[in-house]
Length: 136
Image (cartoon, rainbow, N blue to C red; front, side, top):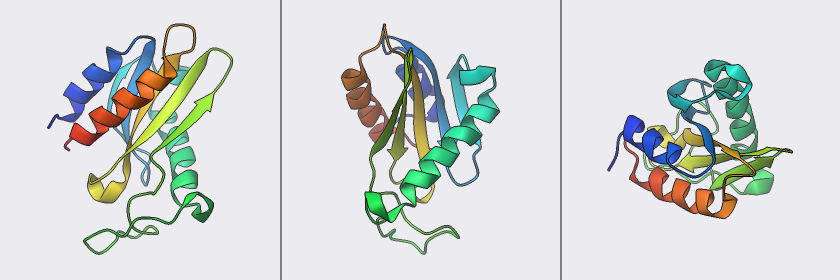
């Protein structure tokens, strides 16, 4: 089990990693950040990626929300069925990996990865492993 800071440091060791963040997709707050912020502002990046994560997590087209063991929070309730979201642009990838079991499943890891230096498949596998070990 690893804390937020240890997980972020491990994510930043991935080839091509530009930044990493742990974000709550309900509030849009960054719980931890490392590296350069996409767009130059970690808080704005956290809010913007939280919007994307929320849209995917709460969209029934991608699968129903998993039923939590405790009563759900005020959002639609439960951890998203989606494991991760990948957004690509000309020079980079953005990988959002949902962290199950943390804060009723409302937390995700955001990795900003340089396209020419990173390996998206490796990053996806490693981010999943890191998310599984993360404790808040």
